[in-house]
Image (cartoon, rainbow, N blue to C red; front, side):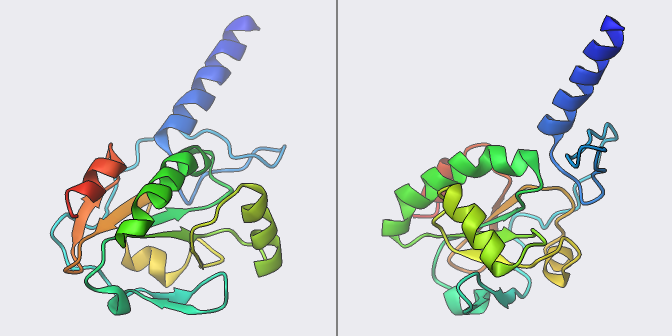
Length: 179
């Protein structure tokens, strides 16, 4: 019995380290269950022009990435349903706090299937103060266009509207290189 518990714990750790896939299964307790299979990340490539991104923000305005050319943009594709996404939030928060005054835009691209009111309340409780695009689903055309197949996915976009970094190991360093 103890061996089974150790194996189960190991699987959970591997699952939380690997990230969340849109096909992450849910356990009977309503929490994401670990998946072991290796997922090949399709992703956009560094140097590639960014795809179109026009979507509703949590505050009701529309975000159009074309209107932000000339700025460094950090896009964090995430959801509260994804443990790895939640673990990355302190890094995103630090980038937002450190670089916003330098003109960098840190934008969450949220995939939670929640009403605006529910999502606003949860974000407030989690002290998430940076702007959020609200897709409401992982099946959004935006997720598909940006080739997001593993959550979280972070893109750093250059002033020229090109992908400058994809899931950088050091987000602050990736941003700093563009300033």
